[in-house]
Amino acid sequence: MPEADVLIAELKDARARTRRVADDLAGKRELGPKLDIVNPPRWEIGHVGWFQEYWCLRRRAPGRYAAERAASILPNADALYNSATVPHDARWSLPLPEFAKTIGYRDAVLARLAERIGRGCDEDDAYFAQLAVRHEDMHAEAFHYTRQTLAYPAPAIEHRAVPAGEPVSGDAEIPGGIFRLGASAKDGFVFDNEKWAHPIVLAPFRMARTAVTNAEFAAFVEAGGYERAEDWSSEGWRWRASSGRSAPLYWRRAADRWEQRRFDRWEPLSPDEPVVHVSWYEADAYCRFAGRRLPTEAEWEYAATWDPRAGRKRTYPWGDEPWQSQLANLDNALPASVHAYPAGDSPLGLRQMIGNVWEWTATPFLPYPGFLRDPYAEYSVPWFGTHKVLRGGSFATPARIARATFRNFYTPDRADIFAGFRTCEAG
Image 1 (cartoon, one colour):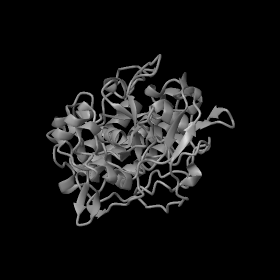
Image 2 (tube, one colour; image 1 turned 60 degrees about the horizontal axis):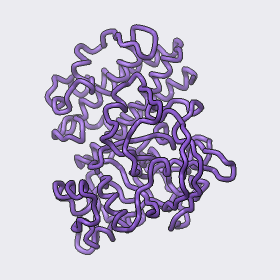
Image 3 (cartoon, one colour; image 1 turned 90 degrees about the vertical axis):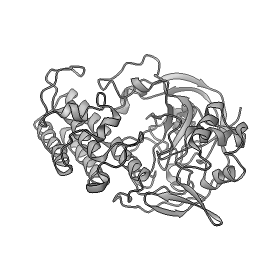
Image 4 (cartoon, helix red, strand yellow; image 1 turned 180 degrees about the vertical axis):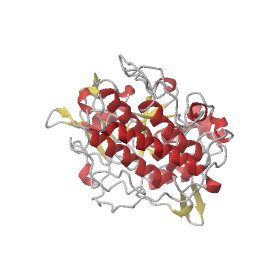
């Protein structure tokens, strides 16, 4: 169990990130248009505070699954901010507190929680504090998505220097064998859908050393990839037709070059950066065009973590030590070249398995064998069977989330997230 000072530091670190990405959105941007893929920022800021209060401060009975709750410090908070019961479309028309008062509520919750933990906490208190931290981490990245979707200015995130690497290309030979997929108890806080590590057998395969680049995906676009049904699954082709997509989201053709929109600015497409803002359907279509395939999530985790010399699974591609900025592009302002961050290579020679862009896999989001849900019932269970698994993390992902066993999940039509992909040899 983490010490109280560690928990408080994590809570404050997560809040500092939220302030950088959300607290400047007052005024015309605090509600924004009603879209299925975003929340109104004023509501989402309040929801972050509500979640922390609900799980960490309002529990009235011992035990992680106890349902009884004390009253919130904000009248009617459950009717405003409980995402399990408040319909998405209603969040723009609720009688929300004004923006400054919303921030005040959120920060008052944190102050009370830090004070409580400082007086002492048990294992359940520590568990829910860690849950609240990671929930806030996820919303911090979601605020990036909102700002990108709505063409708001980039958040005030420092752009750290990028460690350059020698260009890498081609496939890595992955030996296959018996592998334990998933998290173990020694990994500390993990989500229910990661539990627990279980043995699987993988055949040998070949995986691209880097994610697919903008230049590679542009070749697919320019070869008419969005115009040929044979390059798409039947479901993907229906999505392409209904979406009207003829290139990745936020791309446009300008004279003799492609441009991409980053937040509120159009820039020339960077050829060596990973393609981003592509849906699972687009990733799958590219693979069909290229005679390749998406990796399964088991293949992805094996390629990211298996150390053949030691005969064991690593915590991260680079080893068992925590993330440092030279190892992976996390908690940063922008994506980097697929050739950057060589110090983070996996033992099998794959680059940037953590950070830069989330990577679509071929795997539907389903529970692992023996699945038991955690107290936050709405985290995993409602989405089994309808979403696809992504792995690895993006440049905007906090390092606490970007673990090799972490399973992100979105519906296959979503392209607003910072998602790309890498490919495997077809087999």
